Length: 134
Image 1 (cartoon, rainbow, N blue to C red):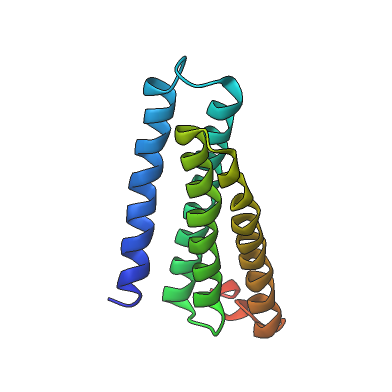
Image 2: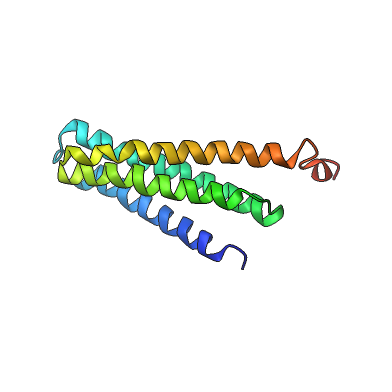
């Protein structure tokens, strides 16, 4: 299977985000300060959106492999680890210094979106035209 490791990573991320979301909603409610719970929930939300985005790029890659798609996946995976991971750790530990890592994850996520745009631009205006005619 092409990109097996990426698919496994996305499956692991999806599993973790559902578990983290449930943990945040049921185990952390009332145990964390509202700002820490909000930080935890932000981590879950960003992980969810980027896990879904990774699924989309993997599906696109299965149909039309292109240079740059792995860079997109890598940047989003790094972004999830740094952004969401630092917010989870911050919320659970209360160590405010962990918040210094969060913007690095955000930059990786933004970089992934920019890399996605670059992939599309590099593909040119004819990208997907053969599929539109079907």
